[in-house]
Image (spheres, helix red, strand yellow):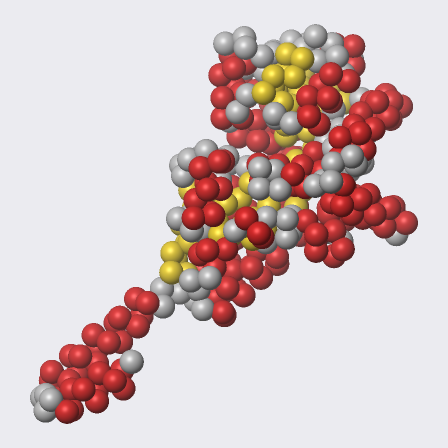
Length: 344
């Protein structure tokens, strides 16, 4: 481009001053053309997703040496999950950090990780979902829909935060609990005698405060970030599920980048995968103390009772995921990954 500018200027007999001005202008245009913006959005704040979103943005900025300018938008500043996913597909939003179940509308296979009673610990869950064979399938589930999944990591185990006392499994019966609008979570609630109520997570706390529901089931960490503990003074650590996180990137936006920057973005996401689960573990430890300091009663089942609970809910995954053509291959891949981890 600069050579073309110089050649045209010389043919027109322009002065050295004018020529140098044109050259500088051309160089400035090149610099502008070589700079890109990446907005990283997510729904939560002060939690592992927030921390991972910041780390991803930092790594992309550092590795690109500033050629990609990153901005982080927590707490749904870029809109609801649906709106941010649409933004990714249209290329108006560059990245979205989220629990993968929000992507189930793009591919039902994403919901296999919501199957209850299959993960015994954070460490086992991380080992299973990061096996190369499983990631080869899972990370490519939304590719045809215009969304690239860069990593998969463990946010933390589930718990039920309630305004009503919860000491035993029997106390769950009749409890109105906020759950995701999926058959898996609705069936889990039914198996435990609860009434599952689908409420957007951003409205969950107000739903509890107004009596629409008695409780919410998700990670203590994400609920702590929104100060549920001021309202829900009882926590039952069911730990029948794991909340996961993914860093996703817009395929449309990626195609606007030079090849080296495309590589930098996706490698930055993949390289922080293990660190992301470590972040989740650290946040979980802090959450236990934070909730206890807020005067919340926290109940965790003894091993035998936990084993009984898992036996009650673990068949749900096979029931709903194995008989669906769109989820069955992903479900089988997850089962194989769990067997591989158990064998090792």
